[in-house]
Length: 333
Image (tube, rainbow, N blue to C red; front, side):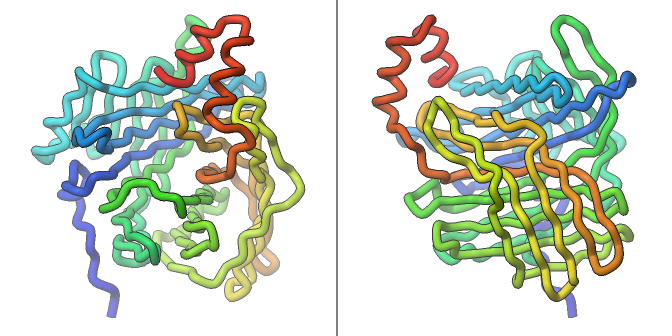
């Protein structure tokens, strides 16, 4: 008998009472000329100094061939309209250039100053843990994914708009607790050329929870608890935070005879906003399941990697920077 779902769509697409919530979108693909791009947008909801429902967004555009990483951070102290997340319409806007909405054809539109993309889901939702409610030992989270979309739209490069096509991923989570000292999150999403979509994560510094989710090519879903995630040799050390991020990994699921190796398409993908910092970026992936050769691409998120510098040292560095104001604005704006 299948597990009873704790999430009900489309009702749960919008806003929840829990203090922490986010909607996360990624896409990888090519322009008509074959240039590769990786794109990410995430809208966070949280509480700051007792003020509820403060929204902030992170997004980036990565030109893989040119090795250009363009990150952005924006806190919406005012001007964010979340009324559409409360009435079932699934619409959010913050001025004319940032927003997300569900279209009449059940696709999604994600807009930033750097891209305007249409996400059309082509697979059923993936309910993490089988029900969508995950026990993380020290906390819990409601969590579902839309693991595969056809993505099309425009990417801004310089002053030009470039036509883009690729594959996308969407996560939506909400949780009853905010970040705490045991928060450490290593997360992978893979979209394989054979049509399988996989997600693996570990949570906690011990870690407390390790889990995998697989959406097979036909849409059948599977939860995996016995897997091994091993960091390999490739690391990248941030000159800003001093954090040393492990970026090459091997993932093994013995019960499926599944073995994957992945690594970064670009090393410098650190996202920083004041003391909030993580590595997020596109991956190559290859491996095998028995005799079947696998390849594709994915994303990695590393949150909780210890910094080699504290915030005071980072601020002192700004004093010696060529343009201290722009440096501080990048971190704290």
